[in-house]
Image (cartoon, rainbow, N blue to C red; front, side, top):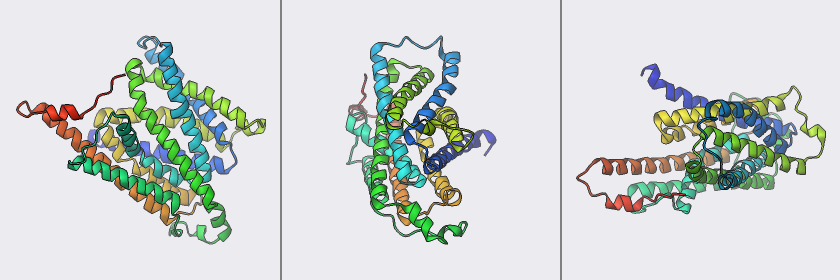
Length: 354
């Protein structure tokens, strides 16, 4: 395997590592007392500062005029799919763990497919092996979510960090109450549903406004304004807004620059080179990175429920992705073979034009 062939594998691994670090430092600053709403505002503000010059430099001549109707659509998408999603994610992360955040994120492709199916932009043929695989994948994903929410299980002792199990007070502090954990799980799932809905609906808006960099920058700008209004409503103490030269500043810069800037660009590159299925297949890597790092760096107890729930989510994800890839392959074969009847395929694939 030459370097050019290895490059997509290296890049996709780097993307998942960036997300794993995001989960870890976000959890660390929340444990340190940073307000989650303030964190989201700073994250989006730094992302806007990073993206705005790039959008102006690369797309100022090619960007189409922004109509009022399109602006309202982008504003609404930003409010629900970005601002509310990130705010709920931050609250959920403060209640639960970085491992849970990585686990539920691994199920995002399956959640997105379910939402697309509900909105009519995807189809499900239960009598075919592809449809059965996708239905089974969604079911297994739901079982994984239920396991994460309702079953903690005993702590798993990692030989690389035995110090976690020498102090019972740490265990009690990290575990938290079952009510808080369940509340965090519900908020985390809701956050991912909103994010998946944003992924499904933004395709329609991009047809009317195809400048991706301007589109992303406008999202970040509007989300900064929206998250500021929410943050100032919940947090009036000026001291809570101070960053200083500490982990808080590092976390918002990292999430704004590396996650929104670098990771999003790398994702676009991978999708262009190898397709979205290839990118989704490596999503569980962030769960693996987060799982190990949480125990070593954050002194977080890893429980059996998190492992089982994560495994079910990964299995369900691969079932959905396998069924989807087989379905696309069959459609491609039908289109390239002029001797085959493809009326059934054409009738089963729904195309939604906004």
